[in-house]
Image 1 (tube, one colour):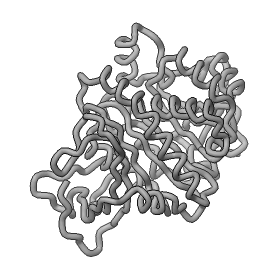
Image 2 (cartoon, rainbow, N blue to C red; image 1 turned 90 degrees about the vertical axis):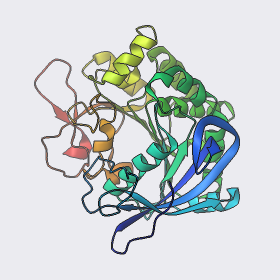
Image 3 (cartoon, helix red, strand yellow; image 1 turned 30 degrees about the horizontal axis):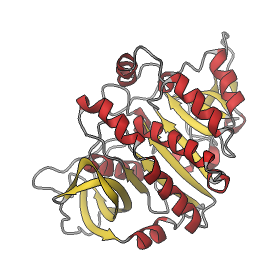
Image 4 (cartoon, rainbow, N blue to C red; image 1 turned 45 degrees about the vertical axis):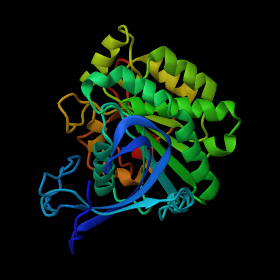
Length: 342
């Protein structure tokens, strides 16, 4: 990940990154370090960038064809928090927590893709926990995520304490969503309502056991801003995870047509959104959340519906709501629109 010469005229994105991985050469390993490391990156986005896709650089990086790091700078803790605390124009700070099977570099480029597809006024922040970055590392990844609760809690608490932002979006994918829920539980037990009340939590394809999530949400309670969960019935990666977990269901594969799911969404104050209709960039349907961005979802903090179970309707043009959401009906053809989409 060596920086290259900045090319004039290319779209440049500034990202901040905090990681508890161990430094290894110019990158980071899958081992947990003794302390957090902080960096600032500028990446250029190629003119041929396609929504939801990551144009990874090859050995001889060409900024006109691939994403490329143009600036890389290590930051001290205090400087990082000051930069991270700067909100976007609408008063938002955004933190992304990657999922299972991600290297540091992959998570950095995924956040760059998200930021390129959904322009964001502030500096998007990456929290990269020590995933092994390989398919066979699933069990080790869950342990690594669990051991990262204190570091993510510190990051969120520090930014909340230093920022004037109206909201802090905490966006987690897969096992990263599991880490976020464990962190919320920890903040609740520590009595940090001041932090929890400023969080907007978004969980994409959460790799969390049904029973475990139920215990987590009972401990956390109703959030001031409802937790949003993107689910898909045909997420093949979560199907495999379910098998590895002893045939136990995963929250990321919930069926929003189920009356029980809708009742639970209202009981616990959750926004459960089925995005099965979206074509994702991977063959497993696990990364389809990445295709949400660029559909008007840069307005997500202001336009999500109230608690309940919803379906993402890809056939409708973008309108008042960036997600074109429809409330799932129990067993009828009649679809009741959410207030935001009328």
